[in-house]
Image 1: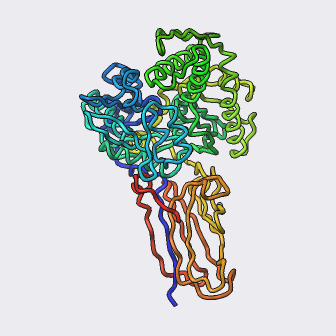
Image 2: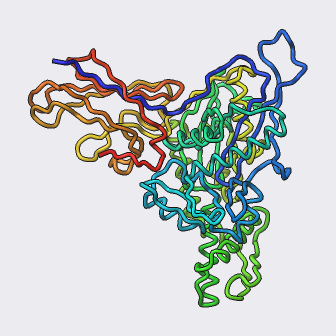
Image 3: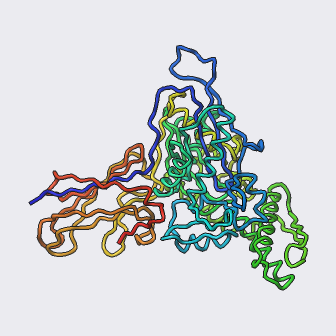
Length: 543
């Protein structure tokens, strides 16, 4: 009888291979929901010729408008494609063809959550064979672009102005992603970079922020630092520590569907109701009016970080009606209380997963533009009973840290070993739809874990092993990664054979799932996930 063993290989977080010391600038990119920032570690020209490491500085590269942040926005019209500030500035009059927040959809399926989320946007998000695509009118033609298409356009744009500034060609970059991005979202981001002709390494945003913080602030041995990152569209909170030259992520939590945009949407909903009630109309039928009101709500939200109240004053907003209204900071905090509570629960969860008390946290580091919301700061100060660390630029820290990581990869700086964790649990399907978890979320890399399974029927000669990522007990609510079939199981009563399933992941995030019949261990086969198929319009079918 043939011996049987099957192995499934999953690329979880690929990285650039280390090289010898390079004179080329090392590039880090924070591809954000709202804004994108590109940074370069630039080696000094007068370095010690006897040194194996060069010294240098990190520069945030300004775009052609002179801004250090570039809106993650792409617009299409009859004549051209616009990116960044130019795209954003015409968005009010061309809202149906101005795409933003693509990071919130990258690598995702077109499910009910995506459908509900897309209702907040003035542009069309359509289902193409199970994946979200943007429908736009470009040069009098209807065209469809995936979220990674949009991301690649943004990356190509920042690459071009960075090359102009550096007068050097850019090929290798480090791009950051939220810590709780799943496998496919990470791979979709990497693929977007490849579409922009970039060789991409992916690292988590809290690691990048911790690198930026640690460069100018000594993290003492076994001190716990909380990296709190609230951006325009995603939220991460991580506990990190330093042991010798090892930066360790102890645990991470958050919500990839929670950011500054959600606070603005709550204000938009509030003022939409107020306007409709006042004038007995439906402003929602006019995309231009809704976009104007959204922009006014965004400005009011920002103003509330400095003032106790903010005004909205829009002339002829809809159907000839002017709209003047006031929102107080207290009212804003009341409207958004549910979001604040979700954030606090994530903080409590990450402390629990890291097995630390809030009194163990030495510093609380703020990252991301939305940490300027005063309620966020007050809530964290009250929870931890200490002042917050605002010493790093919340808009630039992640790109800064990514550039530092790129310089380490290129051999320009002393290498700091980064120890990451799995953001989500990994397991296999058992029974009808039950998730059997082998690797719990926040398991430190590398790891190896095996578990015994068996057959469910008499004389069962094959089993199908389906691999999932997620926290739900029902696999249908988790992310399907891939499947394979173990053949040639010796006939016998159900529950007799022992099937050993093993999950192995190395420091580079390469996951290998193997299954073997205990009595037949010599024949080995491998199946590699086609990562592009994971997030293309060709939806994977777990059935």
